[in-house]
Every structure is written in structure tokens, then in C-alpha cells.
Amino acid sequence: MENTAATYRQCEIKNGEIFLNGKLIFEKKEVPFAKFIKGAYKHFELRYPKFHKMDRLCKLAFVTANLLLEDNQLKEYKPEEIAVVMSNSNSTLHTDSKHANSIKDKENYFPSPAVFVYTLPNIMVGEICIRYKIKGESVFFVSNEYDKEMLTEYSREMIDCGDAKICLCGWVDYTEANYYANLYLVK
Amino acid sequence: MDELIEKLKVQIIKQLNLEDVEPDEIDADEMLFDADGELGLDSIDALELIVLLDKEYGIKIKNQEEGKQIFHSLKTMAEFILQHQD
Image (tube, rainbow over all chains, first blue to last red; front, side):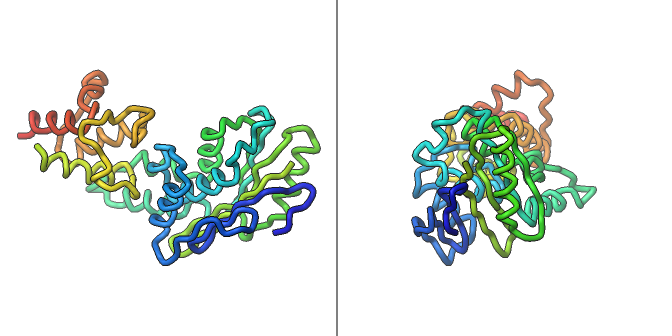
């Protein structure tokens, strides 16, 4: 992606690789996602105990956001001035399936709160907001395709209307077969 | 006791969905609910541990104060299980 006047700094994770502003900063290919993302967490010394409890979608969002926001990118802004605009296409399908499997047997019925809390995609937004003490507007869209133009325009509208001064924006999607994260800042 | 602690580590990793934590990374004496601890467990995880004791060991915990003592560490959990198993 080329940065425009409105968007700057982006982090992208796909196929065992992490790019910051287009530059490859971490690579761990040919390993399952769980090992890849833990490898990135350790490599960048992110140190956040709650990370271990997150589902895979949240881990993907958390690592992407941490790398995007490193070097104190939000320091000029009050918590209420920072908005989050995110989207994906598979919602929390991976964890939804896990939860469904845990309750399908009526004779062995032990639904797990630790799994259930991750059955809404906006928990990704929540985890990022808790980590960075963000208290501004937030929205999460589920759509077929990554419509970056729409997300960026939505963020610009929020800024133009005075609802925010900066937006953490983008796409984080996870399925067993594939994953892709692309977060960027709009201001 | 040591065998039970090792078994509990595996069960807790599974129950709490800690898929990237290895049993060796959990210290049996470490406070389970220390906010700055390695696992950083919270109230939802306390529910999970109550479910685990019920599901795996047939032990029900109803008293909140009792729970605090039982879930202090893996070691205290193991001691409680050994005391209450038939």
C-alpha cells in the first residue's frame, strides 16, 4: 500500500511473514499459525500475560496492533480521541466452532467461558483498547471482502466530524486455512 | 503429588485455552491469579478452574473464600484434590 495524506504507517501479517510499512521485519514460515504468532510475540518481547489466553484471531490482531503502535504512536492523543475501525469476513468462526463442539454432547456438557468470550469479533477491538487504554469510538464490520477504501473513508468521516483525531483501522481475519491482518493509522 | 501437578498443568492449559503455553512454563508455586504473573488469570478463568475440578475430579466448590485458597497456586490445587478425592 502507498501511504496517502490520510493514512500512514501500516502493519501486515500473512503467510508467516510480518511487514511494517512494507518492510519484512519477521519471518517464520512452514509452521502452524499458533507457533508463528507465539514466535512473533516472543521475538518482539511484547510481554502481555493475557496474550496466552486469547483466541487465534485476537492474537493476530494483538500482535499486528502492537507492532503498528510501537514507539508510542498514540502519545499525542487523549484516550477519547482515538477511534478503532476494523473489519473481517469470517467473524469469529474458528472459536464459534470450538464453542459449538464443546456443547454438542448433552451428556458431556461443559461450555467454556474462556472460549465463549471470544465468540464476538469486536473483542479484538476490546483487547486492543484495553492494552492501549483507548476510549474513543469503535466499530467492527463483517463483510465479504476487505474494503479498505470504505474503512479509510469511514475513519476520515469520524475525524472530519470531530469524533476522533486518529483511527486505528483495518482488517484482521482468521480461519484454519488462512489468515491475514492489515492495520494502519488514519489521521 | 508431583504427578498430579503435572497432570493439572496439562488440564489447565486445555481448560483455559492456553494453546501456546507449555507445561514446563508453569511454576507449581506461582500465584495463579497474580495480575503481573506469567499466566495473568482473571475471574473468567476462576470459573474455568471450578468447572475443571467438577468435570475431572467430581469436586464442587461453592464457597468463594474457599476458592481463593484452593486456587492460590497449582500446588494448593493439587493438595485440595488429594484431600477431597474418594
